[in-house]
Image 1 (spheres, rainbow, N blue to C red):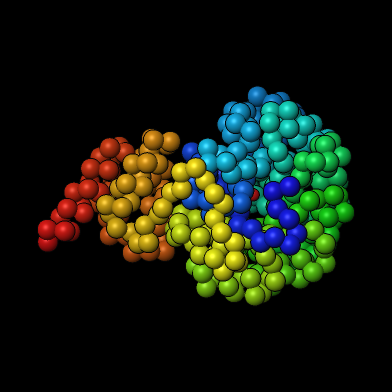
Image 2 (image 1 turned 120 degrees about the vertical axis):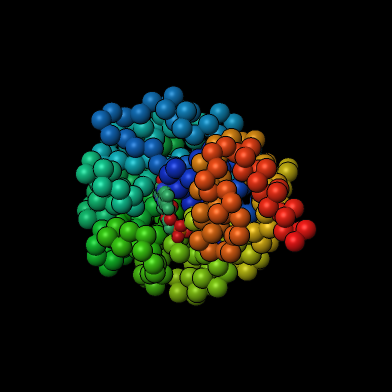
Length: 328
Ligand SMILES: Cc1cc2nc3c(=O)[nH]c(=O)nc-3n(C[C@H](O)[C@H](O)[C@H](O)COP(=O)(O)O)c2cc1C
């Protein structure tokens, strides 16, 4: 089990194109996350074999843990219970310790192909999918579901949460928005709390937790003790540490704990990116990360690096920027 009903936890959200294996490895070095979830792996025409999982989730070759020892759950997405069940067995064969089912992806291509958030319109299908995967996977391996509040009607979350539980979900994570609400703020936390009262499995609250104040309001509105952090993990990288303090849980011990700076000091971030580049050399990911920082914190060096092509140029420019600031 990755989480327990009465033990608070902080989870790193799956974010396709963002929290890939290098990012998962890097962020979990802080010890701030009890577990993380892979980007979704889509099951469409055919059930997937183990090799696909080993390729997309390389941690499966290392006991399904990141280099710091944080468990990684494998997320699959699709609409066919039988294919998902067979794919889940392959994921376990490949080394997965648990399966998460995606019922939240709003991408038109995914929804057109009967996957992700479109299933929120059909509670009986959510139950059938969870049950098929639950029955296929040995009982010691958790099977969870990640839901949005609904497709367009947020009130369906109560039935969908119950259906996921009836299908045998070990826990559910709820992103407090419908598919049609996309990623537009705010997230609605009250319905997460209402749904949580109607099930006896753990419910993880998710959506728009960017600051410790957001966290406190989310906790008060949902009554949850499990929280999943997505974009905020990059925008304010010490957020999960602060949330753990509020929850009264210490960081998970890691062999090599990573310390993030408390602000957007160029030199400190240069060092962070230098270490990150050892895992993920692409400058695109560094710029993507900086965009998240910029969205919530004053980041004076963004204009300096946004047009640069290579990681080494970015690292040099950050150093120069700091030297210029210090001598000014
Ligand atoms: C770029 C991006 C990619 C995402 N990919 C996934 C995914 O692969 N699987 C999933 O269940 N949710 C995915 N999500 C949704 C997040 O897990 C999370 O539910 C959402 O971002 C709300 O949480 P936040 O406000 O803390 O970011 C993605 C979100 C973003 C922004």
